[in-house]
Image (cartoon, rainbow, N blue to C red; front, side, top):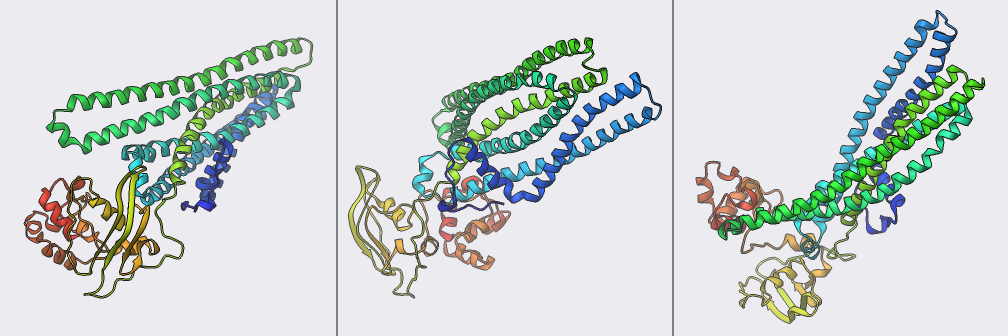
Length: 505
């Protein structure tokens, strides 16, 4: 599985082909063995239809025009053999390509998760969580379809077309050149349709993100929705997002649906012209019946790869639009990270360890609106200090800066004389504990939620922490005790119980 490369290792993809090459490198490169097997199966599947088309010539010649008894069994046996080979190749292709597709989805989601976990709060707060979820689920699936049903399938269909063209050239080069005239027309039509699909699918992804946002807010704010009777308003908002997304997806559907009929139409025109010229050549003795039968079979079978390629392009263009959104997340570097040469935070032994000092600290969430302006104070080790002030005075901001959720614009913050910007984030946050006004619990057991406060904590240590936070008695009284699941955000527990578990953590 791909690991998240550093910014220096990431190429900046401009245009479709660099992006496609990056997709192949990132998500197919690590799967070389499975990919090789899939390609072999594709080649096998691509070889058999032209072989079947070629077999039509000998069948007409040796079974009808110049009958031979030995061919009565040999030709049908050869056809059965080709059918078996094609079935086995198609089965292997379906299994291996499907496996590649699922691995691509998993790899994409892993890369996005790695990036999102490292995002600083400013980046996370700039985009609604519902939009991130839409990227994670919807865009990753579209990217998989682009690689599996687009790029890989494109290679198979091109191989088939080349083999059919070679067979047709072998039978009659004049008819082949005439039949190939329609390919540029089909290519132009497909390309124009692909542009429409990409535009509509891009809007569809945006609409999917908006719908995910509306649903997430309905669920997160369910108590407010119920308390203020906002059910109809919330439903109307969600319905509007559903309608917009539906309109975009229908545009994609219409543009995609017309590609195959367009290919069939122009292919049919080419076939009509070929039939007319074949008849003319046949009446003048320049084309035999077995040659015509083999050529016609190849041309008819070649219609399917052409038809598939027209569909492949629309799938690929949709996936490319999704890939750009995926890589926007994967390539985002967190602005808050360890400084070069950062060392671990060292806290002196009690009673002198843990001195916190703010010196001339200023910070603004938005330009022109300072949350803190030249703040200086010191909290001696072992002291309890309360920050008191009206809402918006910057109390929460001070803790956000101390934990480096944000970085100060000016000034310095020290812990035991060490600048927090010169120590590693893991060591800094490993020495700090946070209990918020609205404590958040993970949808896990109570024991697990307390244990998150210290990696590898034993059950005895978890229970000791619970006792210190006056939480052990009510936990022990629960039917499942410490194995009780807290529910989404801890909503299966009361506010006070959540607070005490957060303190224990």
